[in-house]
Image (cartoon, rainbow, N blue to C red; front, side, top):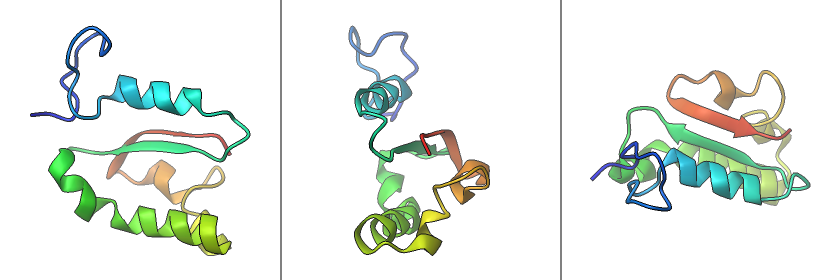
Amino acid sequence: MSDDTGVADVNSEYGGVSPLQALEEIYNTLPDSFTKVCARCTNAEHEDMQERTDGYMTAWFLWQLCGDEDAAKVFVGDDAEISHNSNWQDVEKND
């Protein structure tokens, strides 16, 4: 089972566990007044997520819950680490 089966319309047929189209819809639903980031691991399936996303999840929570400005650099600005990390694709952020 793929995270993204590549179907044209995930509302009319099964698009996988977490297809890009669905992620984009969720991202666009959130108001721009919230800091938001959307990205997918490159060449990964659903079962890979827990291990591969731990560092970014930790950085997100350190920033959002503890105000850690070093952790924020992973997501914020033109030189945000997530924007040029080849392990991540389809990065959208509204900073």
